[in-house]
Length: 37
Image 1 (tube, rainbow, N blue to C red):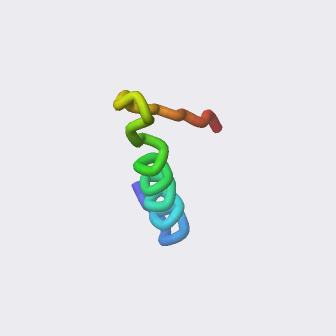
Image 2: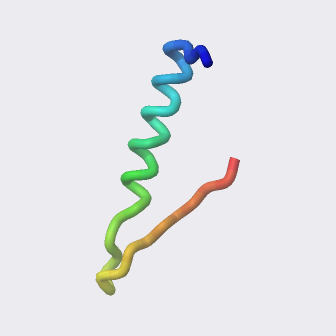
Image 3: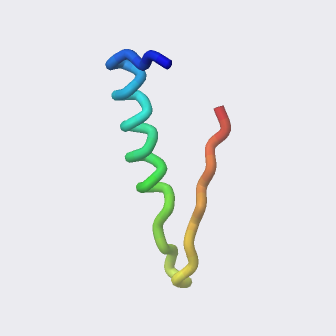
């Protein structure tokens, strides 16, 4: 399967955003904020 550069950059930025969404809250639990597309 062929991935062009724009797709790779798009996927990489999505992964970075996902890492930001998964972070501990004040109660020490994990917040998994999922966005549907």
